[in-house]
Image (cartoon, rainbow, N blue to C red):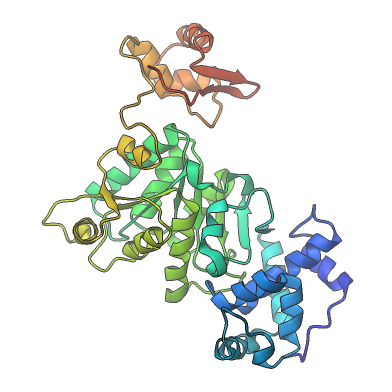
Length: 400
């Protein structure tokens, strides 16, 4: 352990350039300080958040590395005791070589650092205030990181039933068709089904991990998480090399709730971790949709408990009802009652976010290419679909 981190700009640049290749030197120094704070602290550390808010990441890091008297860092929202306890718990991690090893691990798996000042930062995380993450570690396309207005969190039991898995897949597919990003935790059961259905429909999905971004956990979802990396993003606030502990799972849930505009719980045992996600959503004043299950099913006992005891929850049974929680008219449909079967099938084969070629649309709709081509032209003239260099997409507007 060093007395202080006497790091040159060269040391910092060498560590940060692979992680922030487009950043300038001040950006890399500030990003390094934020990364260092993430390494020193556990998720949700309020004291760190307060110091960073007061002085910025770089200045506040420099202050604590001198091992100051706690009273010099105290403020209106922090007592001397708060600061002293924080300094004591950060002290064992004031190890610069260990931090650099963590950064090397990030480089080895192709991870990048996303900062709160970046345009792709999920704005919903700002609602966490001082309890928010210092940075996000991201594998995949950071441009797919969601904003609350266009994303829904789907969470639920690991020990899910066929009923719950069917609902999760149906909801994820329906939300994808409406252009929403599906956020979940990459776990077994409901989480995994939501991710899989989104990927199968060509949608965007984000998995939030409880451990370091280098450890695709659970191991049984290694292939699924790699597919998410290829089509969306896998993120974590925990520094590379960090283990997915129980505390970090509980803290991870606050990120899922904050990123999404709505949290939907599909199956949850009486003491399920999904209820913790719902609690975070409630604290953030986010809508919570709860899917009911058979009254005899222990897998839905937590859902029924939420509906009975939490006035912030809403019973949801359809994708339209979930969309309604985001302020979308539940009765709005993308089809006109006068549409032919051909038009309905073609519209149902289109995504509002991912362009599709004529041949792919024909294959999904089960209609010959000639008919699809002619119908697409008519729908474009009506303003219901649009074309770009990559293919055709459905317009987000609804038909009245």
